[in-house]
Picture (cartoon, rainbow, N blue to C red):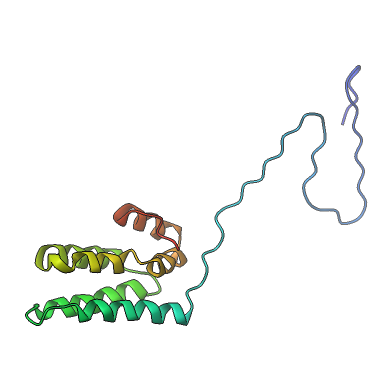
Length: 142
């Protein structure tokens, strides 16, 4: 670094395999920004809890509910627990229940926005998690 008359002079020497950040000077500001932590993997116990929630909602289906209702809950469970959750299916199922079985729409929505589903979505990647937040609101992660 050249010497400036009346200014500060800094001379830096390193030896060997030096690596990392070096800040030299006066009144420097150093900021460090890190991305979000990697989402925690969903455990088998958490998946079992989520599956139990699906079973609980299935048990709420009235005897005269269309067969399609049970099939859609199966699709929702498969979509939510897939390696890359299918948000379109999740949105469709939620909308179907709101139209055809509104008494269960809240229970189905609670499955869609369940914290473990959010964790599964987050594990699939940031773009999918952002789309999840856009479609369903909330954090999308547990």
